[in-house]
Image (cartoon, rainbow, N blue to C red; front, side, top):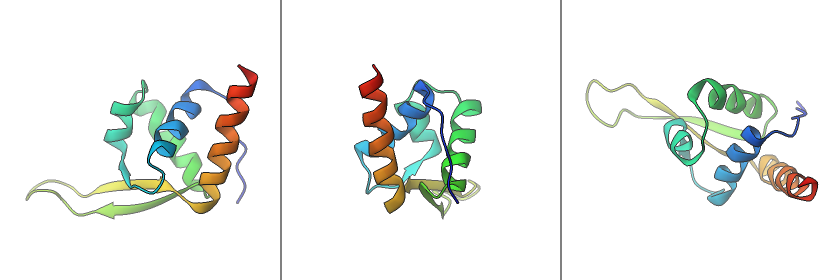
Length: 94
């Protein structure tokens, strides 16, 4: 499924953070710390990126007893190329 993202500083912040370590898995909380975004902004962006096939997602086991499992995210192969294009296009507009 294809997703068209409008150019915004919020989406640029998320994609830039993911591209810095494109091979690594990222917790949503870690992305919150790496970007100036609030959770109400970040998680809908991640959902759109997942829907468009730009991200892969998996569950991480609980780090300690009584803690819930958490989602991990990383750019898919398609997402890496699309994110680079998106970020370079945003820089060109600046």
